[in-house]
Length: 410
Length: 85
Image (cartoon, rainbow over the protein chains, first blue to last red):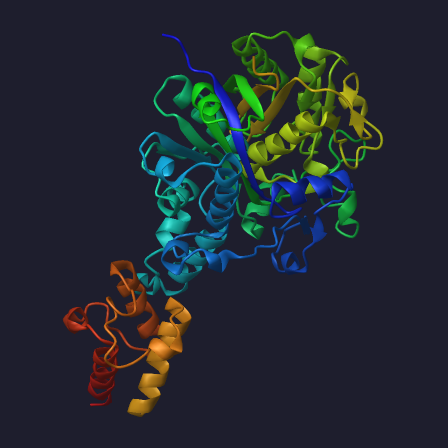
């Protein structure tokens, strides 16, 4: 069976650095960090990390109430990002409802804020009659995919990946497969996440968050840096339009890049400690599926969240495969870790880097840690033609994902 | 609590929970056809009315007969009177 070729034809993003792809890129180019001290988090007993990267939500009331009522923060972000992406790709309304267009949108879980509200309502006096009808729809794991599909009238595939910080990249991988296999023509793919103290808490109890920079929020997270002390949570959504190359060409669509390789795997060893052997395997399989050698890769957008262990393992794996031959940067210093949305938001920024032949440096990386040396860290803005890029995502649960994109679509 | 108090409080529920313009809140307004509520909204209407008036109506069969805003005003009035007895 001849597999179809898949290209990316539309981008949309709601991020802590702005609510459009343009605003996101403008902020990154000016070296801006979205990380702020969050005074309200002082109220959560035991929470060490007091910094985060919230989205400034806007225009949510443009979504009609009966659509909005089933949406928590992450679904609102996903809907707004999806609207941007379909506009960017010039998708027609009849394509949305024609059954050949689907969506795969991942998140760690349903809306954390809505889950907390549901627990507060239920645990106060165990009274089910106080629970609003739509709380369930905000809390379910497929809330973002479901809400985007309902809002846009999508009648094709509707899927939700749930693999924590690898959710978005897995969603893009699933959409890639659906089109490659000829099951769908167009897929809206990406991820979404809503920030809440309980989300930060899940990392904080494991001492994986940054806690030494609460008074200097712009200095953290510090991917690969000797003074890194953990991740900083963010939120948002990134949605990409994936499309059958033939269809995209036929309708004259703008093409950002072709997806040429993808892999996802488990590490089979530990739920929270990433492991370089499994990362190496994941990346090598992705490169193999793309039919490219390590030396062909022009840029690696690292997962690098600024945890001590995770950055070390990723740097080890990159060093083993690429040595210091390929520029590497992480965008977490600008955005924090947008978790289930990160794979999509950071891929979008990487595609813009590809378009502009420019690599954005790792913000807050001043002195690469000895455990993270031996790879080509991008520490200042670098002009470079990028034909092939690799995007990494690694998640709690020992789940890895890697995606390979190529600019020149021959 | 007077009938006017009840009308004001029910209208607040419709404005706050269902984002309906106050100008549309007339006793004869059909809550489905004129105000656009659906089956999920009815669940939320019951939750909101229970909270607003401190009453329990979730299992009250009379809720099924409600069609207009005026029906709600009268229903709450009757419930309040029943509680008063």
